[in-house]
Length: 476
Image (cartoon, rainbow, N blue to C red; front, top):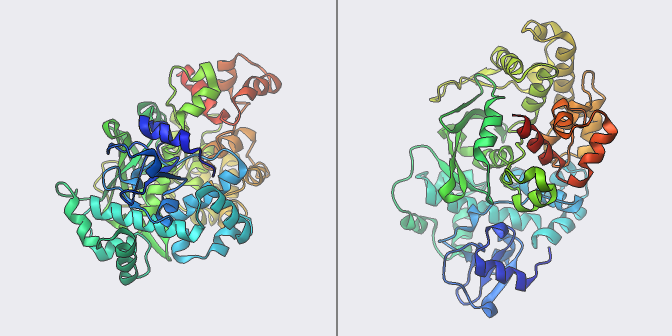
């Protein structure tokens, strides 16, 4: 990733939040690296070097600033194919893909060779994937030491280190302090449940996103109330099933979202935070998107494209919503979750179930699902999706090849282009997905056929998915 030093220094001087997370600045006179929005005294230009990632800054010998905390910087959304590959690999590494697995396994998951992945990743982030993973583990440990009262040994394993000794030695070597020393810089007690701040680039239309999610919650699994989003969570890691709940609220004064996790999710913190970032589209650059969309984004330039916490859950919800009202689909989804999901004891009112996994649904028959009031064609479609995910022929994550997965979806019974495009928008995090047959989209555009609708949206590439959110907002 090529960085223009003069442009970077101007952004640093202005503390321009549009560049937060896009690069990091290393200061030779202090040996520290910062975010471009750091409130510390501005360093001299000749003392500054600019790095495409925190890992690249640390590989150059810098240690993280304790004031601006580089681990809190927002991510960045991919634009082109190589960048999407690098960013997707980084997301998987952030979620722990290299904690137990190899680079070869990660490359295979992304359908590329490990050599190609290493080259593309290094070009984008300035370091090899393994070095990036090491830095991300250290930064997560730093965050846990600062923001929680977890035991340091627990922090080492939660951050992805295989041994406490390795963690302690690397932390001291890289940051020139022992892990316990960082506890002294914290102000006030940590909360009873682990909590984290996930940053975004402003503007951010949190209320609009919460309204969208609230209208589509699955009873027993999700709740939107009092300005907060809460849901049940199930994450499998190292052959162990971890269950619990999260609560997400807005912290506009900190330009971020606060995420609180139940204690049972501590071992899988990276995966939970990564999925939450994806659901709330925290990597988006709203300025670039709004500029491309033009007038339709003028009223709400911070509108986000909601992702999915779980791709299979989103796909089932999309099928249940075919040709019925949002309210009716919500009712069916709640019945589905409570009938086939796992019960969960939580302290959050309305959260009492975990959405069923694909393997559970794949073992059912059409009458089992139809008995909930789901018409047989949709029950068949849900079974087809579950069986395809369970046997590995369908992958509903942003790491998957979008074109291949959309073709696989359309080949399933009961899955048309609208459903495939909607799943691509959210489960596959594809920003250019465009359900051109959607009646709301056509109504907002004033078009009546595919040709005119697609032509009207051509100028919005590669952000047509965001355009859909703005068009739906106009009709609300």
